[in-house]
Image (cartoon, rainbow, N blue to C red; front, side, top):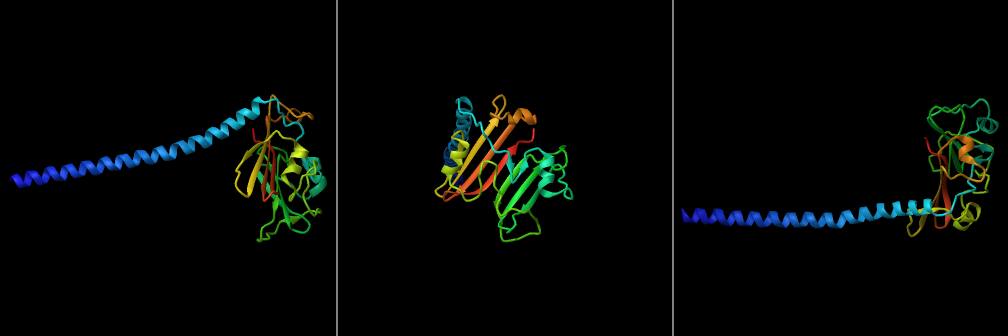
Length: 218
């Protein structure tokens, strides 16, 4: 009987030790993971706050690509033709004349046909889908920004009022943002009755490979 009681006590002691060790491991795991997540969120938040509180204003944003003006349906029709109607809540993809680049045109829900609010430009992949080709060898913005240019050229054209994100050894992403009550020198937000404009430029090996800019859906 004494042997049975002793065995039970030993088994109970070992079980408690194992549970204690497991709890310590769980606690240590949480202590390692949580601060990293909090730090990343904190850094991003502080970057946005710093940008919004400085006198820096993104005063001269891009607003067109190959003659298609933001939220101007007539200009879209002049480039892509009357036979093509871009409906709301959709993104339409077009190839350049040599199919090496692709242009995305996004129309927000509830907007007029072909009233483009967001532009995106990237290199074509190898799938070569059956997208319509436009009469442009490359998709260049009104500010002269196009795929392949360097970071210094982007900053020269748009200014230093940006936040850096997704920075790696070979890649970097520049984020510009304009939000009421601040506005551009052309009063872009006020004239289009939109609260927020954003622009993102992704580079790899100091070469621009992706562009996206326009109005956030309110």
